[in-house]
Length: 206
Image (cartoon, rainbow, N blue to C red; front, side):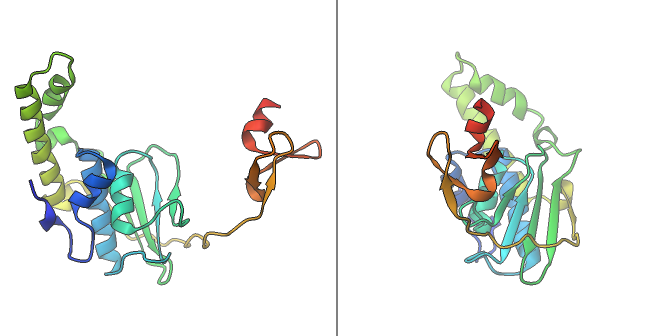
């Protein structure tokens, strides 16, 4: 099933997000759709360097869709993770200061799109699931994902344009060895304890 038509020409396709994530799932589709909406609202450039910064508030499937669409990654320092357990994504253009905050609506669910989806997923995951159970679930899964990618975004998301202070550019810090295990630690992450410089795990075992 092809889903190429859901991305503007300059953005990666949903297939690319599925390949990166490893499987098709509604969470990935939600993150992908949020990122396409965010990037489209911010203007037509993907983050080749670091002018786009994304702040994510969960570490679930959707974040993989966000990384593929935005080009923001932990390694480039322009993907910022707050462990709040919220399906909220904020896309910031560091050059212009524009920002888009996209929140999954409290009243949105996959069951709203397809009332049978939850039951079919449960059945397909059981040890005694048949090929027919599996096939039916995959059919409904594809339908749910297509719906997430195509229905009116206002049914799924609340989209606002907050005023934000763009996060500072990723800094390169000096590293020094932990006084206990000898492994290198970026200076600001080290713990100073009784005149010693320790990594976080060693400081907890101290």
